[in-house]
Amino acid sequence: MILFTSACWKVCSIVINKGLRVRIYLLVITVLFSVSAQILILTASALWKSHELPFDWLGFVVFLSGLLCAVVGEGILVIKPIADALAVDSQFYRCDNDYRL
Image (cartoon, rainbow, N blue to C red; front, side, top):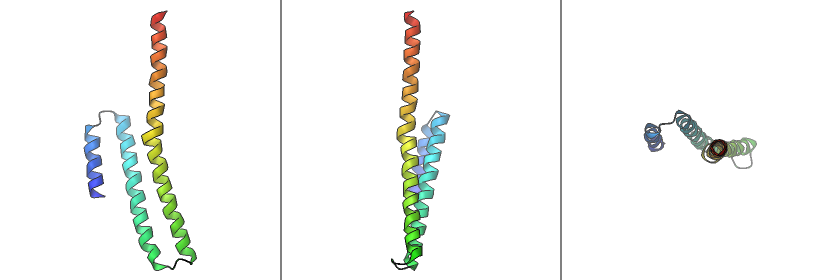
């Protein structure tokens, strides 16, 4: 986790766009908390046997933590850049049509 954090600091030092920097920070925080929570919960699950109720709940929380990390990662790394590209594309066509008139 220390190597991941230092790599993210290096990436953020290169980024010149403030919006992109905020997205990277959000992604880093989400991944760090999710992985930390999964490690702690999986360690705590060793206290119960597999057929007991707390073990099942801890497994569900680990699943939700991974799901949250995947959803935030997909939103930041896939959906937001596509939306930005489509917004730029629509502005390009609007500007291009203005010059033709």
